[in-house]
Length: 72
Image (cartoon, rainbow, N blue to C red):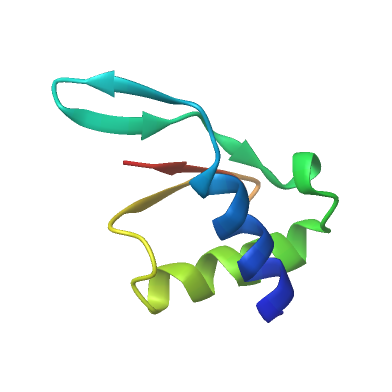
């Protein structure tokens, strides 16, 4: 689990960003890009949200599962 969180955080840290009115908005990150199962991805995103490891994570749901995360 911690490894999945570390992978997501590392990828987020290195993602290209667009600067919109002074706010960096990284491109969306999907579980398929990381090679995790959707359940592993959901758990890792929930852990990151619950522990405030990033300012704001916006999950994008499909069929009640997180499929993308956007960081603002």
